[in-house]
Image (cartoon, rainbow, N blue to C red; front, side):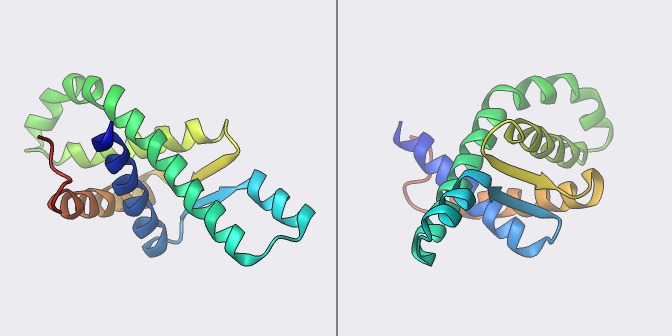
Length: 142
């Protein structure tokens, strides 16, 4: 259970870095924005809502990677071998796009501007951040 929570935190951090670098990637919480507008809540609460939004999208992304990605990787194995592994970037971009589609049915929305460039670049950034964060002590599977 602890490794799953750590994975969600790593996913959220990777999504934050990608959305910070790429202008076409955005996470917004409509429910938190409405609550802030109704109550006149301070900026600190809005920041907490944004962190929770990133953690929520990180959890969705983790679930998609745990259940859908292995099947897609297996089905795309011949194409991955043919492209010497470069098709894995397209698979990662598709998992991001699937996460975006799933989040459109939740109060927290994850939007991607365009599938090809934004999603592919985000997939590369998220993979690099996740790889670096996985090297941190305690992040490895035991």
